[in-house]
Length: 321
Image (tube, rainbow, N blue to C red; front, side, top):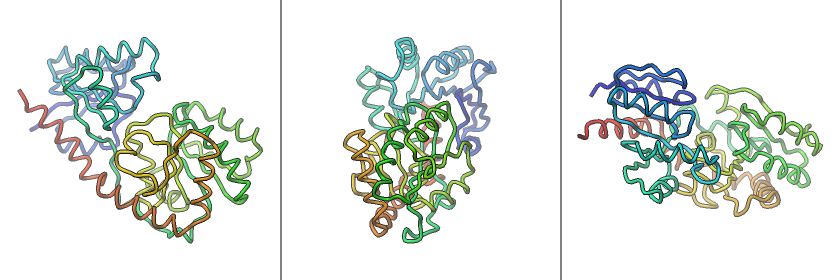
């Protein structure tokens, strides 16, 4: 079935080119520049004020089916009142809502929505993201890759790393990404006197570059307040790098504490530092956990399989009367 699909969002899906093979013509637009044409399907990457109303208008004007995607667990206290009102209105006008994990789906059901599909948004090229170094050969480096934004709660990781250095003075922390919190993080690092052990890489890297860094690292740390389908931690997992993470997004649905890594019970620097130190000091444990994490990622999120699940789910929906 060939369709003309409009995707409205902040940035193109990483699977954008592959989706064309399934759907046909796929157009990406970033509000307020929305090309008004005839579409078979309009997708809002989020229901929020920035994307939702523009996508809904395009769907109504073209008579297209309207899908809204919810990629993060922000529908409660993380939105302003205006954003909450707009998001709920847009969600109630959708023909289908995509939740990227079960927790988001439960939130949507509690709002009274019923046309909800759980479709994860993690696509991993396991031929690129793969183990290239065993853990006995890796450095004592903790890595984070992603946006520098408040919801990632990176000050927690930086404060915990200060405690890690008491036990492991040669440890390193590598932060890779971009975002408005960069200067805040740099000031915190300097104020704690740990700048010699922390490197902040302020740019986006290619998949192959990231795979090299993941293979140098002992552990991937994620301290987010909320997530949807966090991709970077799974890319690291595909490289055999275990995790220490808050129990956010899809992670508690696919992983168990002690299998592939550790979950935090509290957002507490002491607990985080203890779990990081445990992994830094035991390369055999890291090797075992990393191998299990890769097995899980490969079975659930291998690129071709995961993209096909997403694309075919929308094709089936488009065929429904």
